[in-house]
Structures are given as structure tokens and as C-alpha cells.
Length: 250
Image 1 (spheres, rainbow, N blue to C red):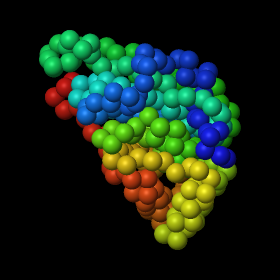
Image 2 (tube, rainbow, N blue to C red):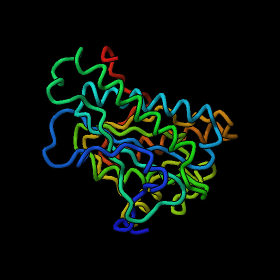
Image 3 (cartoon, helix red, strand yellow):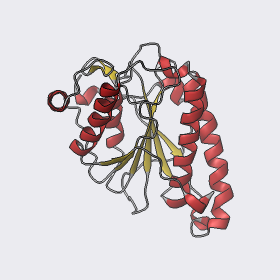
Image 4 (spheres, one colour):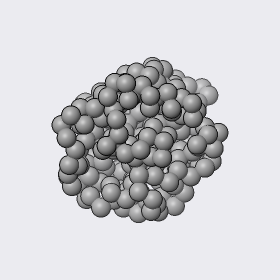
């Protein structure tokens, strides 16, 4: 799969989301953090109400932080096993009016209202993503998101982290030993699927969290976590397995 044909966005689901900004992390970029969300809408996710609820809560927390403490610019990339060529991230405005940006008391209600609306539409996308192919092409989605991000920005994965794609195979059984990870990263690089995320902070709070059960060994779970840590560093990013909250912004 060549890089110039890769854009992961599911048009039917994306139509449900807000698209109020002309750009996300592009020209005129400010030092305030912008962010992107990779939302795993693979069929297995849509059948797990608990997962959808958790992801919606995570999205709201992340979006609130971007609205209160960042630029208010947020993009969403929907990831499944059926990437759509030449699709685009959905751009969402969760920030206050410029006149209210310097006052937390003034911008708080406006940000909360925008985040509530965006979260509702994110839930709609999870419930009806208009995709049928099993899989979770998460690395590919990160390549799409990387076009929108700059150093200091944030990237949130709403996924259990079990990559399942033609190039990677299925992480439930894939060789993710240190040597296996290096081979896989090299394969991504050869395919033009290296995400350039220098200085980006990755948040991956639901890694290996699946209410339906994985039936994955403890050893393989540790290997999956090692893959994402190694992949993040390979992409120039740092990674944590929690969401940075807006703290007193709520």
C-alpha cells in the first residue's frame, strides 16, 4: 500500500462529525497544542457498548483539553480494516471564540458545549461507521494524522491497540519480539508508512482494554505494548498510556 494513496477516513461516518476549521496544525500554527484522534471503528469495536462508552469519555476528556488549554483545533481519523484512498481527516472546532480565549470562566461553557456536540457525533460514528471489513489499520491511520500534527501537538488513540492489517498481520499472533518488531517497522518504512511525529505526545489509554476478552497471553500483551512504545519512538514521538486531562478546565 503506497503512501500517496493512503488516507483513512470513512466518508459515511465522517459526515456525522463537525468540520468547522480550515486546517488542523497547519499554516499559522501556534505554540498551543492542537491534537488528532485516531478512532478505531472496526466491527469488533462497534459491538462493544462498553468500549464505545469508554472511547467517548476519552474523546471528551481529550477534546476538552484541546479546547481549554490548546488551540481548539482537533482532527479525527477513523481507522478500520478498509482504508479509503484519498480520504481526509475530519476537522473539528472545540475551542472558544478568540475574544474569550484568555478567560477560563468565559471560555469554559463554550468549550463544554462544543465538546458535548462533538462527542455525540463521535458516538454516532462508532455506532454506525459504514465499514464492514474486519481489521484495525492503526499505523496507517497514524500516517494520515501525522500530516496534521506538529511538534508539541497531541495524538490520541481510541483503540485496544491490536493492529490487524494486510502488512502487519494480526497482533494477536504476530511475532512482536524485539527482532520481529524491527522487521515490521522496516516493512512499514519500505511501504512508505512511517509516521513523522517528531515532538508529538501520543496518548494510548485503552491499550489492550477489551471487555469482550482477547484470549491473548500475558507474553503477547507485553509484546504489543513494546511494539507501540518502539513504534512511537521510531516515529519521533513520546508515548503514555493515559490521557492528559484539562484539570481545572472542566
